[in-house]
Image 1 (cartoon, rainbow, N blue to C red):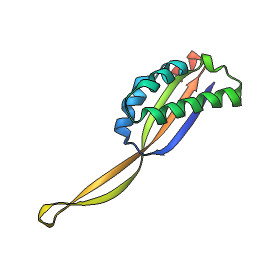
Image 2 (image 1 turned 90 degrees about the horizontal axis):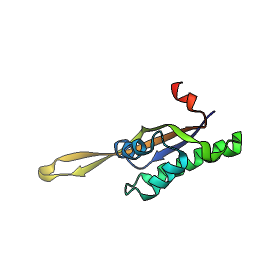
Image 3 (image 1 turned 90 degrees about the vertical axis):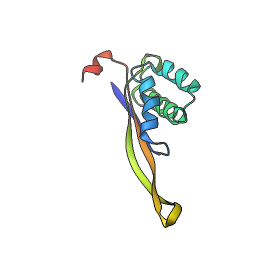
Length: 116
């Protein structure tokens, strides 16, 4: 059975978040949480919270054993952008985009779900 958890509007760009999500894709939940605990990236903390939330959803809502769960899919999607202007020399202005992202985690206890 597939169970998901979503964290919305995380203040880290999706490009930097994908470095973290690709490191734990396809791993068991326990292994992924152990890896995320020691990653130096800033995105490791929100991703570990979402993975733990997906495991808790599976355990509490569907009575699945959290030791048998693995990450079927984990995606960092683009969210809104805050547009700002920074002054430059000679009266010019440079635009700054502050990007945010959504993280979606799908965990499963059945290896046959990978083909779906």
